[in-house]
Length: 179
Length: 355
Image (cartoon, rainbow over all chains, first blue to last red; front, side):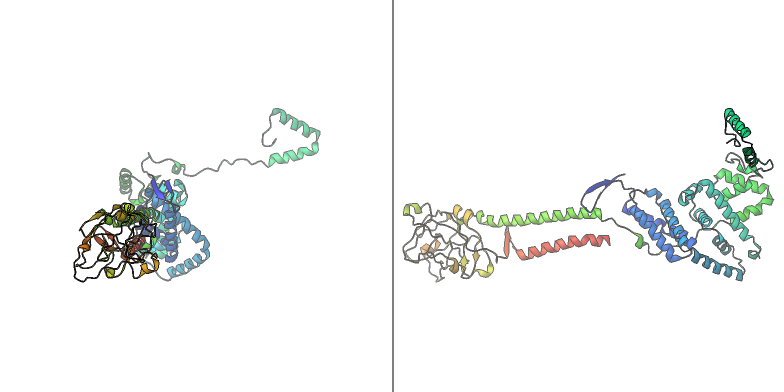
């Protein structure tokens, strides 16, 4: 599909456009919440998550002539994930302090709610394992799609995800979480 | 290379011969051969069955964990899922493990990204082009209307084919048209027939040419000024007869916009010509009143002077604010204002759309 756009110099350039303005805005409506949920569950910081989401959509807009409309979701998640990893590396020390405080809270009281316990277990996973679980359970991506987003092959995704499941299971059955 | 078995037979023989010739180096060769690692026999990979490809293999007691993970990850088709569920029913001791793994699946939460409008984008390039063509179309339409108005206005004087109507002095006075010829050489009476004929009525009744087109309502009573252009005038003289004379060459091609102006002529007139005053309405009728003659008053005497008319422009119509399109009188200033407003609207409309 090719469309004609006019540049600022009044030159008619016949450039292939895979995503129109309308399709881009439709992507915003459909996937902004999903991307935001994925990032905020990882970072546990709303403002930083919003920045990453906006950066991802901005990049999608800039590259709308090379990104097909059908693949905008995976493109968004890929860009957002990479942005998130960069952000985590920058603020890793600060994030560890936050986790320490969170863990102290966990030890202060018994948790009976399975859902809450599960989310606590999720926060104990590594960044890679947490992203794998979120992409799998929240977004329903396949092993292959997760691998494309995170830069892993299918086998790696399978193995890392299974290890994450085992870690979550072990946390659920740990004596401090079982009444 | 000797210790790594990388040498052929001849090279190995050469090394051995060298070592025999150099006994001090034989110990070094022996040490190098001793540091070579030997494989261990007891080191094996446990549970090779987990490495086997299981797509075509049903779930069994050796590979159930992987099937459990595939089940909770929703990577199995319907048939494979049924087999797993059946297997779990057949092995109750594995049910708790299967249930616990199912509990590790997160349930999607509804988290909303607030203010999605900050993410929307709009393309303006296409709108720029579309708007440009719209402006061009509007500009072309405006120019066309202006040209039509310009063409139609002068042609209204041609509608009557230059026929100059006789003004009835008894009626309401309209701004008279006075044609003022430039100074030219005197012309014989014979020539006057083909050029300007100026006849002064004996009654000293000055006849004026009624303007074909009303210029401005506000200056009806003012002294009119006429633009004159170099050209001969063919006018038939009359003696009090009511007669309409075609003056194609006079009016149609040479007479410009008549603009009434106060005493404008006085400053621009040529010496031999005076402004012909509109005759007073004294209620008297004169047979010469209906005669349409272009009269020229000579300051030097009462004799009629026949001169070829030379017209030259003496005034402009800068103060004329009105123009006529057909029979519709339009104000130029208002038209200009309207066009400017239209241009502003078209310019501001794309900004409103993008917002």
